[in-house]
Length: 288
Length: 281
Image 1 (tube, rainbow over the protein chains, first blue to last red):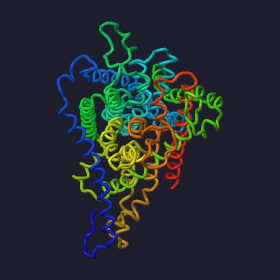
Image 2: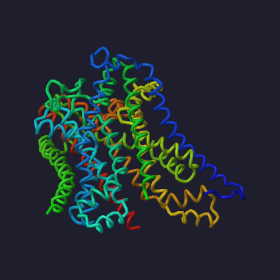
Image 3: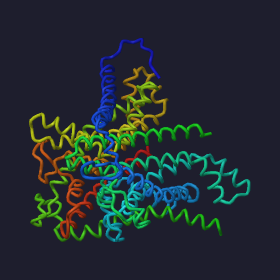
């Protein structure tokens, strides 16, 4: 939508346009400055020692932290996915809109969404670490993250389910399927791309989280010893990449390595973003 | 029977989020409120000295610090964010708009610890270079938080602007306005409820942010006397001392969390109020 320019332009119009462009320019500049600076400073320090399997205080290797990040994210998504998607299915497919229970769930998810991560961390420390007696551990951290990302998954899954045309459900019922079968066979498959989009968003939050993990998962820079302890290693303390980066930049001894770790973390975030963009695009294609 | 089972399972998963919310509130309140009573509510909220080793637990400097830093972040993010949202919604072409939109999404995905690190290695030395203080200051924290909440403001405002019916804009043009005036006098006011939502969401994020603030704000628990002096926020207070605190000190930190939670719940209420008002319209 553009106006034909026949009348001479008012000065105020130029001013307004200039300000708008400046606002957009500032945003773009901030982004390029941050991403560019971190990559520019970090990439020269990406040495093989930084990726060695074992962490020592000399090589400050980030591999254990990277593995921990994967473990932590997978574990919390494993817990959050069924709960979040199940809740969304209940809200969209089963509950009568506007009944008391639905309202309570809405209020709860909205509240959870607003709670800062440090509060989750504190709760995790009081509940999972102390009350459940799990200590600073992978499990306590993952459970804390689960609660944190739950509203994200519920919200996005709800939207995805609401986007499924009613004809799909009617077709299912028309063929004589029960409610459960309709949900699993007719509704869920076509809502899947949207749900996966939510999962990737949640993954991004898990990967970048520090405040919620500092007092729940702790800062031990080793991969939990699954080979030696089996499933008991779930209760080992471990630090994720973001926590590792925070620890490095606080110590201030390995500045170059901190830059490099930041660059790796940024690369992880960038690839998650690309994955999200891909999923969203796929979703647009499959939409009828 | 089987259908009933499935239904009950789904209902149970939905109940988990309610249970989690109640548990969080209960645990914090049960641990925090008695402590507030022990310290004395007024000594706790209005006390100006934070010296845990002497059993002096006044968090007024931290409350003020949180408010200053949040206000500063909004001063940075709201003008730039709104202008950027208007640009994306009403000015940009499809191609450049798409690129900038993707950039804003990326900005939203960058972890807060990265913002903190960037602030620590770039912004703090810049502010120090001005020759006032050591650079760890309200202004550094405001700048970095402002950039951090920028994507929230941009995305939510943009969605609100996009949702304004095209007929509003066309009507304004028909009455003789040019593009710029039609956008700012008709489209933007029509999206005001969504824009207000974006600002309050940004406020909530800034208020609750921990890692980015703790790395650049200086963290001294005293009232700041200028924009360039260090400051400690409620969130920073928790994350700095929780690691080693024991006994009463620990209890007081949990009580600090309760104060923060109350602030955040107020923000959530404000959000709901804005939404209801928007729906009535």
